[in-house]
Length: 279
Image 1 (tube, rainbow, N blue to C red):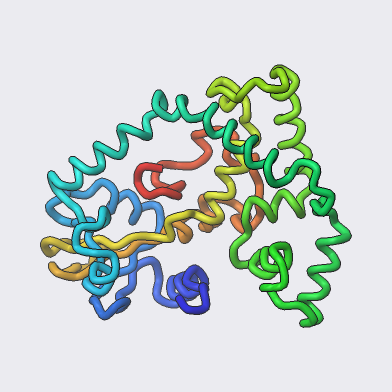
Image 2: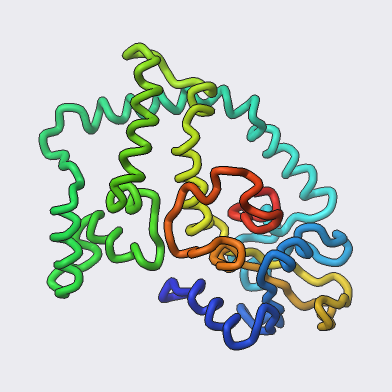
């Protein structure tokens, strides 16, 4: 974790031991489950079998009453309160406000600033060469930092900066929407529904870089999974990234390809789990 290579470590572990293995992160006996079948099992199993609780060391850091520790009626009550603000009809109310805030920020900090530089291929090549020759460090500037982490953690910004076709398609889509608006007219939820390619780029970014690496579950009673008995009191951990990078589900998974999710049915159930079972 200190080297930020958890994904590679889990991948190597799966290669050596298969999709089911035991380990002891944070000093707690744990079973690591990987893949679509494991995701389905964890997200649909009886609530009396697995509880959404973290290892004791994590609870001491985050607090006994943090959201990841709540279960049963407490969890339903808090989750229900939060979800009520994330319903589509509620989010639609924020579109114009967010557009207004972005415009204000650009007006205050970017418009008329002659120091703003376009990110072009020449600049990227220069920064990349400096990194390879070890004459620059990641902390030098944002672009150098993003290039340094690109292979391990490719962000949407890097894909826009290095893949001209992705950038061009997004720009074309945004310009077409802009043509239908007056200069001071704010975006609406209808405008968002027209950003189909932009949405696919965001989804592909989430596939390659899920905001939730994975999560723990506490075993409340002994149960069997794929021929193994998992004892009460142990932890179960799953990792979204492992499913997202499974080439049997997503061919050539390391390639950034927004077209792979053009159709909602192209990702089988419990295979795209960027935000867990609710994704």
